[in-house]
Image 1 (tube, one colour):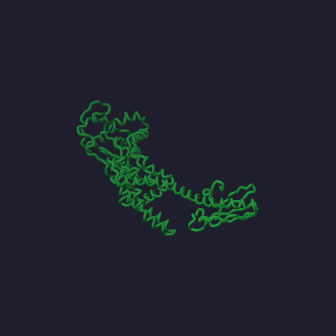
Image 2 (cartoon, helix red, strand yellow):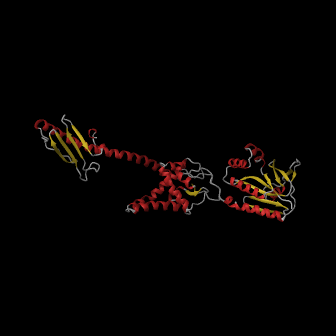
Image 3 (tube, rainbow, N blue to C red):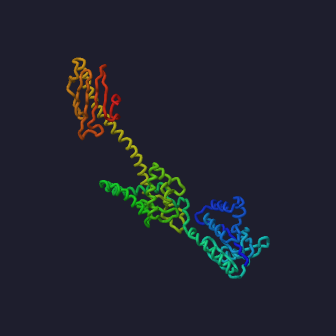
Length: 449
């Protein structure tokens, strides 16, 4: 029995979500055709037969490879002549007769189609041959044969089974393309996150009051809030719902609990990068933050639905979204200034208190210096000064090695940073004093540091 011959027909159609420039470049590389030549001799003439072979399995493999790249194709059992056809007044092909007949029956080519056999310029209206046609629909393309024998039927069935093996890949939704009307931007996501944290604020404070276990309940509760709500049918936390956005996978589908949990824990990486990971939501093509890129997720508007046309109009930001962002922009700088200014002010007030104690000690130093010169003793000739910050002033040692020790008060009214601390001055033979203290140097005068 004569062996059958098969043709792989490139239809020129792409799977949704694939970029034509990228697909056709990859197809040209697959068939080892120069890019310019591919554009002029293939793309300009699709649909056309791109490969002929007596090996059906080989063409099935190439059909699968084309599908992986995003290009649709058809496998045809050739039983007649090849033709060029006129579509939009442009010659397309060559194409097997059986492919043209089946396309006319499916309404994929217009009635009154003109065709010419390969090698001829005699363009005439194509007349289908009235004969039974076996046609097996395959999700990856079509398997078409005319006047097939039982042997050919077996081969066609094999080709159909190969196509069915990759059908699930075509049936999957395409990756969500970039688009301002599809993906939620940085500020909308920022407002949603702020609302979520306001929702969690009071419960968090109450939980953290619980000794020891409070911290575990706090982190577990945050995980449950974000992961469970983003994997629920609503696909959103309260903040996201308020802003009209949802969390999805890269194809726009609902997240499972595992993927939602992975997204939540990956948020720690966005945080430890000094929040640069979150800023990526305003810079990447699909508005993905670092944790979205890690978990392969997207944050989109709630008008994005699997299997439905993608929206083309971007919803406006709600007024309370702008209010939340303005609050955030005001709170953050104020918090930073407060974090810097308050400790500086506290240090200043403590230095002022210590300076007051030092002034009191200076009067004692004068009195002891006079006693060393006049009486050769370390006694103070005047009463020791009293100060609320000073608990005691003690003079010790033998002239001229006199020592003055100022002990600061240890009661609750004394700031903890200087509470119970002491400053010691020691007299030197040349008449000067040296200062020593274990107190933090930022509260001491330069001479005591």
